[in-house]
Image (cartoon, rainbow, N blue to C red; front, side):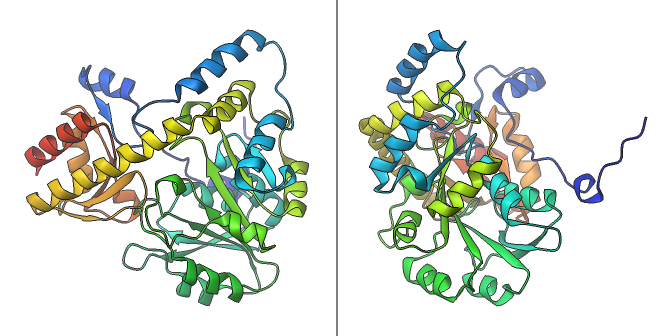
Length: 361
């Protein structure tokens, strides 16, 4: 039986997530593997979030609040915006897909850095629009090159800040100038999945631009710093008129009851967030010092991961680390054939990673 599928859909390559721990156990029989591949929270979820999930679990026969009222109100109060500025998503990539659906048509263009989060390209191509990829400059987003490529067909520009997979940052003055130079009608999407880990005081924040009535959309997530990756909960902060348009295509009940309750509780658990950020900062410094001592190059990160230049085939290093029970991310498919990306783990996990890396190198 044949089914007609548009060429722009057939050309898509599915997103490939990091290897799960269970697969490593099946493949190599390793019971004590550690996963440092997907930038997850090494402390797990907030205990308050777990308690909230247990309470809501007794009401799973009811549909979730379709508007995510409690979470939208909590986020608005925390960020100093109105609930009408917020759109909740099944992960922040849900918001990316919605944006592409409402803002892109065949023949339109979206500008994005290369490499970056693969969902930008997938969402753009799924709408029969064209992704225009701008290479990084010194491992950082090249705003000047992006601006030079903006044309009549440009509708969207994606900038992830801090950048994934390099951990670098776009400065506030540079982004201010970039926004001021964008033509009317071009929407800037600032993906801030790792914003909680930033140490640089010169970091811009999407919320400030939204409050200043700029056509800017900020994307944030509970998957990283808040430890709720398994619940798939993210949100976008944007001008109210854009939020209203996104709600027209947002699937009903796209954020489940467990995710909504856990996210509200996680927002209130400020101590857990502080502990997470402090752990990541301390362990990043440990990794820097240790890698410096070994003469191994890396890119200093404003996120909860570090890009390491291993000087050899990254796929081979990835496989050799797998055999020692350590999952990292090879950057070969991202255009860095001699780099791996490593999530900051607990101290003993980071020590074990360094020991294994020394052996495989």
